[in-house]
Amino acid sequence: MAWALKLPLADEVIESGLVQDFDASLSGIGQELGAGAYSMSDVLALPIFKQEESNLPPDNENKILPFQYVLCAATSPAVKLHDETLTYLNQGQSYEIRMLDNRKIGELPEITGKMVKSIIRVVFHDRRLQYTEHQQLEGWRWNRPGDRILDLDIPMSVGMVDPRANPTQLNTVEFLWDPSKRTSVFIQVHCISTEFTMRKHGGEKGVPFRIQIDTFKENEAGEYTEHLHSASCQVKVFKPKGADRKQKTDREKMEKRAPQEKEKYQPSYETTILTECSPWPEVTYVNNSPSPGFNSSHNSFTVSEGNGSPNHQPEPVVQVADLSCHLLRRDTESPQNLLPTATPQEAQQWLHRNRFSPFCRLFTNFSGADLLKLTREDVIQICGPADGIRLFNALKGRVVRPRLTVYVCQESQQAREEQQKQENGDAASSTFFVYHAIYLEDLTAVELTEKIAQLFNISPRQISQIFKQGPTGIHVLVSDEMIQNFQDESCFVLDTMKAETNDGYHIILK
Image (cartoon, rainbow, N blue to C red; front, side):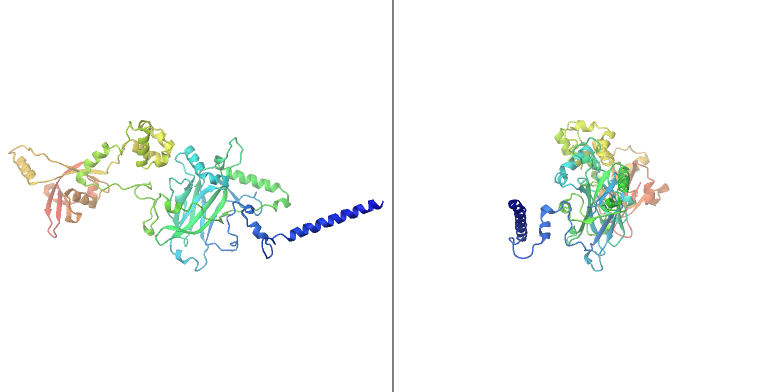
């Protein structure tokens, strides 16, 4: 009996000893790492305890950011507290992003009255897909030739200057804007979240994307490379009207939950505020982009210059006297026209030379004959409307016709004598007259003056006036309106007359 009474006592002693040992072991935590009190925040700061998607600086919770970006789309109500918001978007629908200036008075004075450059990207939220982003986008490009993942709705946007979409960066757009002025940018996302799921059997969940905006200011060299601010938000993209149905489903599910459960979830907000994040790691794209560089002079901004392709190079200036020969060479030279005998390698080179590099992979095994057999509808379906029409015209070797063509011949003393003999009936004309073609696009007197000056190899300033010989030999001053009423392929004999007021010449069209 005595032994039975001692057993519980022994258990109490053992239990008490274990508690003391555990307390002692706890008190030793952190003392081996160094002197001073142990801080739990040091452990939480380790990478293994960080959420991979959290890029916010730890000490900037109360910091007022210089800019704020607001996506005008409602957040989902089925997101738990302390989790990042989730916004549903419809494929191809235009959504407004308001670019707001939150600077205090005197903050960032170097950008006051100046433009800043913002780059909008649609990127993967999952780290696994971020590592294979290039392969994922190339696969999407292969399945959707000629389409873009992200586009700007330029007509609806306000305050946006010089918008650009690099043809090799399907998920990126960029533009300039003035923080002191109202700026709203409308974007369209053309890919859906289920296009990047591993298995597609129907009913699978789509992968989330991130819409990230990086803003840069101008450096001393006039390049927008100095980072100012970055922010992003999490989105999912559905087929048209699918986002509305998903939002309604989430709302109905939340209404069925108990009040205690509802407290664990965030309310749905009418707009989505992009939260601060680290700059996109591919910052080198700002400098190495093949798109045209931004100039520091904002008065010359245009969406494109001359040709819509960013790699367009202007053709060399050709003298009018040699224009017919130049056009003949263009028709016979192989670099301009693709020949049916071209091998697949030569066809690839032709595509590169004519600025169709994004489609080289699609036509890897196409010979010249294969490409020339494509119909207009085939090319548009493969490359999209804009590039498809351009490629079809290039394949067919179509040259844009000038608005007006006139033929001119310089009158000489011999020609005058022959003409006098013809009028007198003394002899038949045996003189061979050579005419030169002049191609006009603007249909102005200034353009005609420049073309005639090139023909004579003189400066346009040496031509005072151009007259057209009218009825009874009168001289009619050539104006823009007169040139616009010239018949196409009209023939003129050029005669010169010394100007009375200066050292120039008057040109007479007979």
